[in-house]
Image (cartoon, rainbow, N blue to C red; front, top):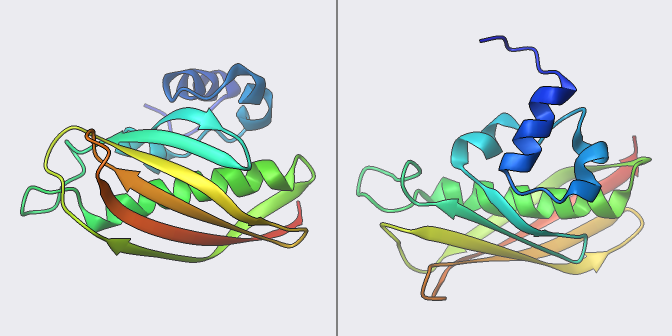
Length: 152
């Protein structure tokens, strides 16, 4: 297996991750990132104002058998960064400058859903809140990410 990706490789990755077709041209060169693929994140909605994705607990647990706290943060940062990138547009670039999370309860099976909502969409900064819930809708964690927006 080669470490060199082609746009065709990324297209399959985008389709598998549930990225809407209208975003394929924008993401074809970079894809969604190796960590997003490894974590099993699947996108359900994608916009600067709201992003929703799922991630399986299985394969993303810590030694106690519950979803790793870092996995919560990976899902949160993925959603917030993609939302900020959409806000930045094709001539902009979003760079994460702060992320933090509070873990409310553990989960040992099923899918986690992350719902990302814009708090601030400015010219140079964006801030998003991301709430992770279990399949019963119980809040697992709350995260916040701030991204710097600059010209690409």
